[in-house]
Image (cartoon, rainbow, N blue to C red; front, side, top):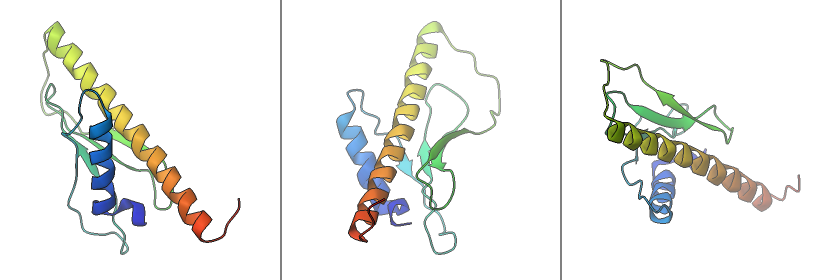
Length: 120
């Protein structure tokens, strides 16, 4: 799908980072081999206060829904109260970015449909 191209997703990430007061510029679009000739839309969201990685991706081809995935944690994470608050802010930013990408995908698909002459 065109909205999963690295170029389109990077524009959306830049838009999100510019609109967010706390600046979530850490997320980036992963370089991936296209699946069935299409980009998969994998967005990496590094966490600075945890030993695990988080990524955001569409649920399936053709669907506008996105999900956040937590990779297995290689070791235990011990955090001070301040570091835990920081992790909570990071996770809130990941959730906001996931919701933003989903909204942009819905909008993009509606524009494509309107251009194609669909009214549903």
